[in-house]
Image (tube, rainbow, N blue to C red):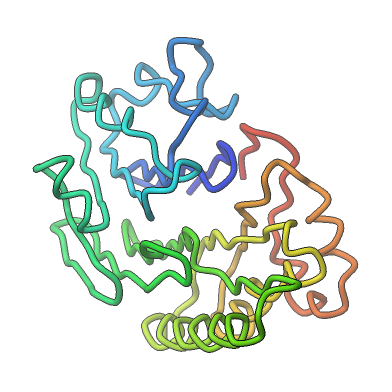
Length: 241
């Protein structure tokens, strides 16, 4: 299995028989400029022979761009997995809502309820278990009302328990988890809670707005010591792992 960091929460994962694409937006989809996955950009010619699954966690512009639907013109085999509100935009897709499972011929998709909007995905495919959080995070904002922050804590911890129950004694092979530097000293709450509840071989931080200083924070924070060795450190778009 190989992965590429494309930008923000946009990532690509190549398994034995499939190419999974999550939360594509913006310049990732400017294939007219050339480049490819190693440059943090999708190039239809590079992936034309792949069995492609495109996942969208929600409709925010830093996670979704309608241009993804143009890929149907360029790729031989492409499927979309979308939150159910997208059924007004496209007919031919797998539509999901939070806290459900869908068994397809070649994979199982389980969703979790975001603490913002949309869903998080757990995908079992080609013998691998891959988690992409979307905007499911512990959003603890300094200066926000205590009621809001406590509600975020409750909802996030609940979803991590559900994720832990779904994974059971297995290990997630690759997990994409938000580490948003705008949360300042609270930016590691979500990934720490994730690591406390779920066994994962590798954790790839996402949603860090191009600010690689979050990786220094993870490596030095006391609360992250027990999972820091599982972190895949990123430096720029196109980094592979």
